[in-house]
Image 1 (cartoon, rainbow, N blue to C red):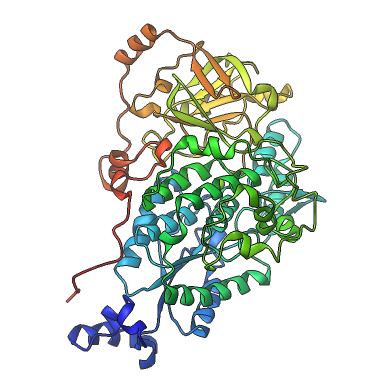
Image 2: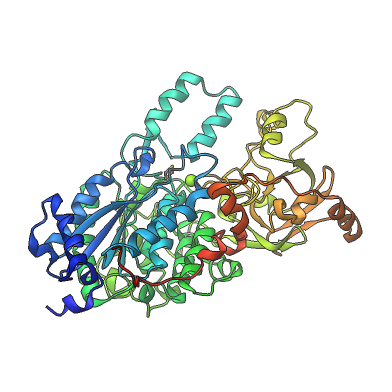
Length: 574
Ligand code: FES
Ligand code: MG
């Protein structure tokens, strides 16, 4: 078959020389017969399985389903592991290692006899890291999102991953919940396989890859425990073999228009603010120009069509039963670019038009009657964020969107923890909480600490939200009037580093303004006296990361990882 000449795996398995013996013979120790090496498409199954990533711990089964599909379509499936990043256990933050995991994925694909790749992804960073890596190689690529957990159920109440952790924490502080209740609630919240079932970052990433056209239609919302998830994995295995035969490479899918579509969809589903940083990083790998401002320009006026926590009421299981992302894609069809190809070889409209009925209008709304008129993230600028900062209005308090308040400054995350619940802390609900040195270089890794819990004494008074500003991120499951991703970050001398207790700060979301009301002269004097913090590491990956990480406004990738190196490797290993 002519594939034999074309496919890159032929350079390994099709060889008639000494190297060919080496490339085939050792593979045969796994019991692989001769005909698997006859030039058929070799499909890499990139597995982010790990028991330390509970959200992805069911992926061995998904890999088996993908293999079935690949074999059925006449391909040769080969599963390989890559670094798996779990949000809940990994310190100091999984985000520190997103770029490392992307390098692992990229080199594992390029260096091996792979013609097309299936990415098994779930927990937050496992999606962007593997997509970034695959994007820098450029082979046909399909994503199988691992699926959300079933809805949390606690004493007759629906509870959401993450979102209810913040609530339970507040309830413990105010005495509304006992430690025993909380322990019980832990089991109620995470009661099945899968990732966070709120519209946190994992669900956001699943919607992102579906809206980018990297999954089969409808893949994002299927719960991990639903057998249709396995069908989706098997069908994806079949499809990737065809994609290789069609040479439908990832660069044909990830165009500027596809990124714009993803921004529109993310706004409509009330997706995480982390979406911004990951989409920027993926675009950077593709060489597609995408700016921080694009998220505001393209997304901020899009109405919210999905009523999921943390912005709304329901959970991913409800989303799936209501029809899933195809319903949203269909509703948004006039806002989406039509001439974009997806992994099916067709555009979204062609993919979803026969399968887009909404079965629950409490969960999925319409453009005529949305859950919120404007839902997308906004980009703020001002002397406090010269390169920009972001906010998710759908998770914020309307009354705080225009606010002037006195800064209460925490010089580090440790300083915050040490003082936040002190009865002596000079703070009231009109103040603006400022947290420094939690950005990419500062933390390091830009941890999800931006949604600082409010002071206990204000929670006890019944205060539910305050303006908070930092150069960190916030969990996609969190909520509040939280200004995030302030850039340039404090650790490299951004204005945020110069804020002092008592300074007045002005937030005006409508004007997209974030202003520190301190004169230029005073700021210059403070800047001259500012001492950069000691770098967080002097060796190893963390040291490399600190030296090369780009600002949050650029996606926080490592500078030398931007772009693609293609899939060609010219030298053999022997
Ligand atoms: Fe893995 Fe939320 S902790 S998706
Ligand atoms: Mg998260």
